Length: 322
Ligand SMILES: NC(=O)c1ccc[n+]([C@@H]2O[C@H](COP(=O)([O-])OP(=O)(O)OC[C@H]3O[C@@H](n4cnc5c(N)ncnc54)[C@H](OP(=O)(O)O)[C@@H]3O)[C@@H](O)[C@H]2O)c1
Image (cartoon, rainbow, N blue to C red; front, side, top):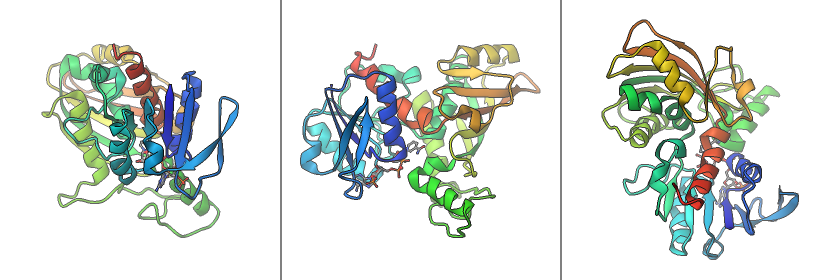
């Protein structure tokens, strides 16, 4: 298989290389791209060092089977169509194409069938959305979801290398902030992305629009508040759901347990325990009645929320998307 990773030096890019190794993806060609800042540096893959190249139009036209993009939306908008025009299937981690009706937005465990006989750009959803829909898709199929109220507690790694660096610098005394809208060290910042006219943020609207698209149900009423917390890896979410049909709590428990790559636990689970895992952990399932329940939902954002999902899309597509 001929592969390219665009944004290979970033948080998601480096994790994608690890996932490709872990999944023993057979790459006859693996070209790594980043900006001119890190071109010439080397990254390791399966015991060999690979030199990072400067991304340009000629390079991305090399006719790869798959190109995994994680260099931000503007890079994807420009280079992904060029890659596709040379026959490459692009798996894009950015928000550039997620809302396009003709572009599949895929979480393979839920709607992997969309990859069958598909060629072009495949969009990887937002990290907070992936972990939430993985815990809810079976409940949605059986009981219907009327309303979701979600508050996120998102790790700084969700903002890439620069998010991690900003928290680390502040831990060492810096008072500067550029990535987050306030100091993040010893603080909580209740705004991620830009605030829109109606008061919701761009990050919150990703959760609304992407959840509806993946679950293929525009009727779900979704109320997110996205919050940055001083955690390195692992997004947490408090999720309240109202269903269309009545349930017993035991039925909800069974649907979560039966969900692919989701683990329901009675343990007190925190981001430190989930970092490095490909599983979504659900705990604190509780309810007062037969239509509403609440959970604590937590996963490694760089793995579950980005790299693992992208490599699963690749494997599913390469395997014929059955
Ligand atoms: N972090 C997460 O949890 C997460 C989750 C889901 C989706 N995403 C999305 O994935 C993408 C990458 O996120 P990240 O967290 O990995 O960010 P990051 O750590 O900041 O990495 C960005 C990558 O893009 C490269 N890049 C920047 N400008 C470039 C250019 N002009 N040409 C080529 N490459 C360029 C960087 O290369 P240099 O080393 O040369 O700067 C680096 O490899 C974003 O679209 C983000 O929204 C991230």
